[in-house]
Amino acid sequence: MAKQIWDFSTQSILLALRSNLVPEPADCLAIQTSIAEAEEWLLSNGKGGSLSSSDAEFDEIRNFISLSSSRLAPIRRLLPEILSIIFLHPSIYSPPALGLEHTSPVTAVSSHWRAVALTTPALWSRFSISLHGSEGAFQMLRLYLQRSKASSLTIEIRQKAHRGSIHPGIVDHLIQSSDRWMRVTFPLDHYTLSLFNAVRGRLSSLEVASFSDRSVGSDPEVSLQDIIAFEDAPKLHSLSLRNVGQNLPRFPLEQLERALFTNMAGSTVFATISRSPNLRSLTCHWPAILPGMLLEVPTVLFSSLTTITLKGDFILLRNLAVPNLTSLAFTDMQRLPGPVIASFIEQSQCRLHTLVFDKVWTHGSSLLQILRAAATLHTLTITWGKPNLVTETAMEALIVAPGGEPLLPALREFTLYGAYLFHTSTLLDMLESRSQSVTDAPRLHIADMQLDHRLFSDEQLERFRRLKGSLDLTLQYTNAQKVSVQI
Image 1: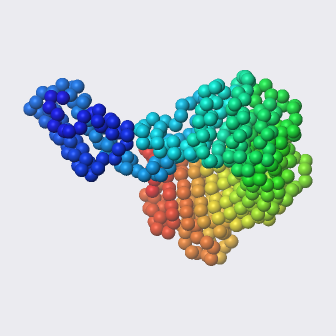
Image 2: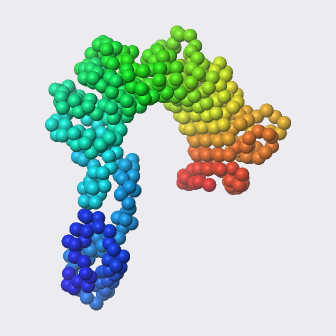
Image 3: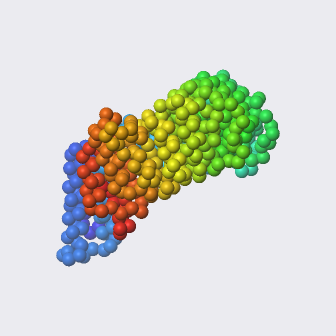
């Protein structure tokens, strides 16, 4: 630069940034003065200025301003405890794949950040690894286990497309740390799981276990009944099984509280949950309605179950009675017969509080049959369904009239997304009747709606605005100019 009128060199600033030294108040004032002088220099030597300077000089001064401003950034004054929380935020942190990725990127920002990261055990307690990993992956595993100190571990055992030789050091170190396993994910095959039978009786911290497709080359006919690694895990309460057959290892099913089954035979699901008397939450995902899914088994009572979420198929409900069920959700259903679901609710004699229909393609008459059986509902959510799922008849049935018997008298929250076959005026009549005390029934408190392919008159929009005085109302729609509008 032709003339330097500030006191800090670029090299000294970079050194301060790397060390994360927080400037003293007097230094902050000097930095602010230098930035102001540099900005004034840019104005004086810019277009119309009295002096002439090269592009390189301008770039150097702009860089000086940028670096100096970074020294005053508020994040540099955060306590280490706050930085640790930020490092673990999902938006900037994801568990690394040891052997495929380098260590945590926050350690390369500055020496201060590195020091904070190295004293944040939780940052090193989640990772995935292949048992066929290289020596480099093994050394990274040792490093992560050391830096995680006594923290609980979340580990995923990755599958390889082609089976190679097992690295004994990786298996040994994972077994040695098994008393710290809290969440684990394994491929469900005999070859892999048999390596870990030695952890039986050591899984004192294990709470969540997930198992997915067998490894490439594994024999589906080989029994997994001699896999005893997870048989004794006193804290295990959540089990997830994905794309697995009827052949399962020994699990302490009697203590499970949550279960997630994905793309599994209905008979296997039913047999598993039948041995899980303390199950509270059941989630089943299927790609679509499965042929031959009907189960020839008697109805089973599940007294502990409170939440059921079904995706793709509903037929499991034919064999369940759930008297304490409070939440029921359906998603991605190409067919959902009202009589079957209504019969399940009535047979269970449950007081359902939450009902969700997400991407359910069925007729409005089925919806009405289900809602009539669920008189105790507090929350109703309908998103992205078939247009004739919510019809004029269904909307009229939801209107509360003085002296009448309304459908869903206890409804407090209503969510509706999509394009449906009812008049806007009928929707407004329903919302107005439920936001006012026309009966002794509880009022509607929250309405969240995103309505597609629907135009509103000025009078209707004004009615919606007036509703906001008595109702927590959110309405998003697309206007005639195809612009999304929210009121």
